[in-house]
Image 1 (cartoon, rainbow, N blue to C red):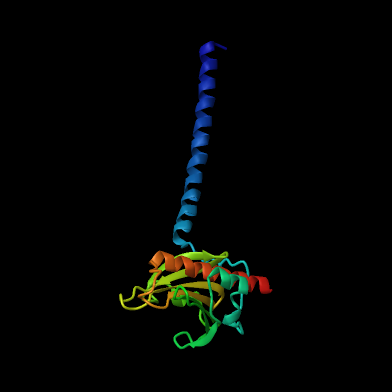
Image 2: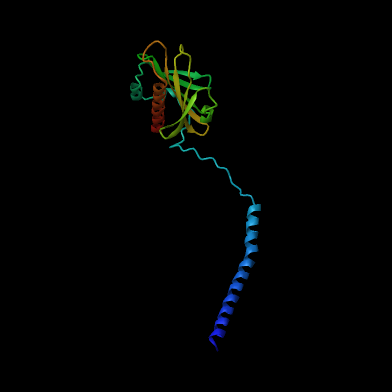
Length: 206
């Protein structure tokens, strides 16, 4: 057999292999196309999820006496020099308690709210300026309402203690003419400290 004949046979076999591979590839194309069409006709379904609120614990506000939320040691920290004064919050329909500091004409107040969650105090739901905080690992919101110059200022910190429940802590100036004259940052810092103290008291109770 001549070298030319042998070379021709090799070339022929190579050509047949290429044609076979091409045919297999062409047969596969409709299958791939069908898969893509099915995928495009089937809309992707997603289930919206709401991230769970992260709290160290769930703290129920039911039956909480607001006048027990500051221990005697904590009261000394805030300079409380008068007996606590229980009251009712008409706006929030819940019990409240005020701890006065007569020397500085300031006070710390608490309102445990067993029937209203923190969403009630979100931006757009209150007239004040709202900031997000974390108090003792609990989500919280700082609410500051700018007031007229002749009215005493205050700042609220509301803590998300349980689903549908909240704890409101307020630090307020009881008058406008007696120093110290507190800025928004100072008022809200002390309101946050009061909230931290109350949460610590509740956590230690049980």
